[in-house]
Length: 369
Image (cartoon, rainbow, N blue to C red; front, side):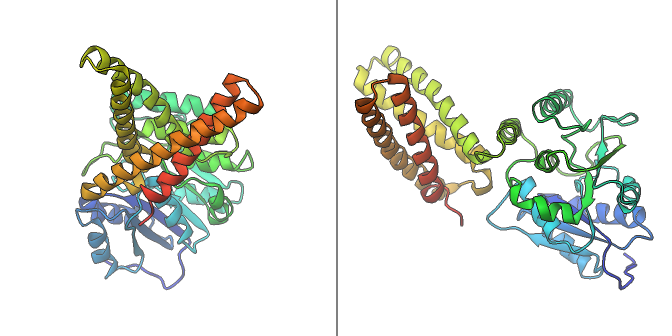
């Protein structure tokens, strides 16, 4: 590949979060080379330790092209976190985020850059919903419907004035991300929504229509659990970041555990013929197990446990939740003795148990590597 480096520092950094995108690496670099002719640019691949060798493929190109950089993240995962890390690694005045799967139209980058250079905008967004844009064949009907619903919720709850707040293709002034980074969540997938909501209406935004392409290589990094992740972000931003997205996800999983507990209790008594106390114990362990599995899959997806570590994590989660029950009952009894209002005491006890379980499991079960 010919190197067209000018010796000048980059004006634009393109951040590409990747996971198992090895086949797309040379294709996207070549596409950027063609689209950004005449621009001093660089591309940063932020790879979540892909097992297919994505980082190695990018480094092979970087060995002959100084415009290519690689950040390999070990022990941490997540699209939003990768985007933030990549943008903060840049010294360029402008940074762009897009997918490495070629579903985004890289030929829009010069127009987006021109809009920001002009000084009338802080953020340029490629929109599938603006006049002239389209989802095309890039999303299935189910995902397209989910995207439409997510857009509507963001616009209504957060008053976000974007036609496509779910877009993952945008460009902004680096000083904006420098200012907002401490307020952004490293979890989840929708970093654009987080940026705009955290900007609290101060950002000057311009939108460009584009047609979402079909993926050429690899598999989508999104799964059905992203919907819950997204709802957690909406709620967190709606309440002004008073609670973290991770705590909201943990609480949501805990609430689902109540239903699991009741179903298991009823099943143990009727289906297995267990006495109530035995069935209650059985249901408690069933609920704790399902809570652990859901939290491991969703709440702590960036620290997901596998193999023997998963078994160890399950045992520590049992221990944490057992202490949480004692904290719940103890606080509830203390409050009820002083103020005999059952719902107040019960709520306070449940809140104490939830906070304990979240804090302790973060340290003991899903501790950072």
